[in-house]
Length: 92
Image (cartoon, rainbow, N blue to C red; front, side, top):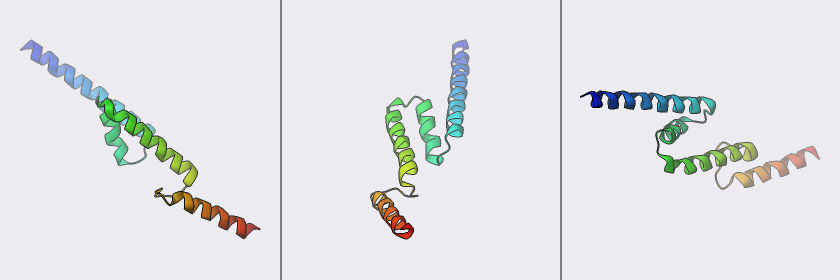
């Protein structure tokens, strides 16, 4: 019986650490609700999802920084080029 109590206490402590880590991660980078679950998955030990999450976050940051379009998508680069061409004509 004492082993079961120790195991339950250990599980509770680990769960508290994991939830605290997920909360800190999402507080530091609040992109959207999807990141809450991804960060919890990473902290929760589903390490095989970590590279996918990191790549998606890097891609999201790149799109926000360079494309400045809300959706991104395949036509975002063309939209960005069209905006620059139009701005150049309007200011010339």
